[in-house]
Length: 231
Image (cartoon, rainbow, N blue to C red):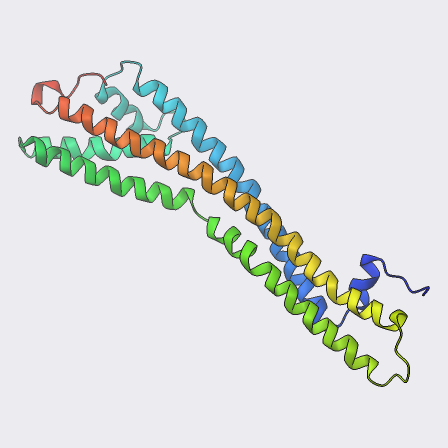
């Protein structure tokens, strides 16, 4: 009954397989926290840059001025600004080719913006699936360690003549630590995945709305003499 049942002691006295499982889960947990902090900081920067471009876009500056700023890369270039530049670039290329059909102009610009939008979303969503995998798989990895540890504990007790709670408890406790670490890795990953997914959905809706609004502006500026008009 005087055995040391602290977490550190349980980890040190666990079987080799269980220790490997614990080390794997701790490594995964550290990696998931690194991804979480990176995504939080990255999404805040994306939101700030998009808002800054939004303010510039709706302050009455001409499309040509905004496009030139995007080409020069003055200041932080937001995903929304890159979408704008892709649409404007395609629009101007079609105009240079003497394309006068409004539908063709808008269709080309929209396709360019949708392609740019998808590239931006791929970057924004990067590593989010890792958090989803950690949240769904970690408890099962921990459970595997627990099952293996309990099997190891009962195998070691098979040679004893008398088995009491004092002899069984340490082995089971060592095995259950693996499940605890699995949950420790999974719960933050699941919470962060849900929160980050919601934030990314909001950014996606904002950028999709911009694509539609900018398409409407291009439709109004489809005549050759009107390309330089402000938004």
